[in-house]
Image 1 (tube, rainbow, N blue to C red):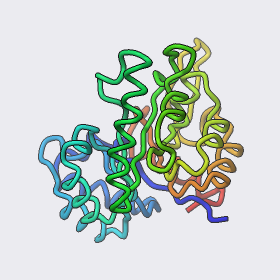
Image 2 (cartoon, rainbow, N blue to C red):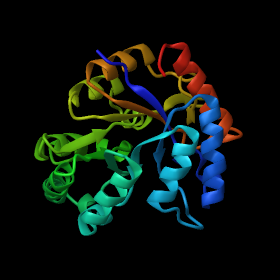
Image 3 (tube, rainbow, N blue to C red):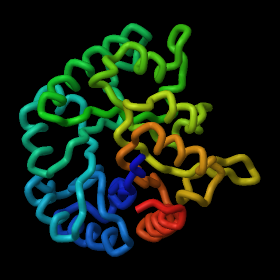
Length: 259
């Protein structure tokens, strides 16, 4: 059994990745921490970076681009470009950060989206690119007799529609990260590692991997058993410098035997 590899989800440091120059500096920083891969997300908001330029930057730092986050509309309407960009980046996982608004209206619309996304995912699979769906906690709301996550799981094509489970958001929605990672076994090439903590006043907050209350031994074992390839460290907000938070998470994961 091969252990999953860790990656830095660059959304964590999005405020330092607004231009190609900032992206290059940020990639240098995460590589120096010991990360060997990134997930491209939230970058280039002021000055976009091309797929070729991002690949050049990452190659220069010894970083693999393991996954992306792009819009579903782009995947559906510009499939050929998405494939070309991912091939340029050497990236085989294309992710979306959630469903488009039109999918969120009813049980019927969620079912329709699961089927539509499966068709798009099948086209990406022809180019050896995995489609993955990233959850938040609202996918644990019920529509009809099922939560949205179950609708997506049940109504999509298991050969093509895959998941990018986010440990924090599963817990935030009232689910079990361990149980969901195990449920999606074989359908989850990447998982988002994000810790869940609580104040004495019952306020929830993001924290570094290993510094909160999630059951990490069970999570890590489930990732190994479920065939997860990549574990991307993400922290939506950080108490200080987000690079410091990425470093703490990386160090904790390495102390547990992951690279």
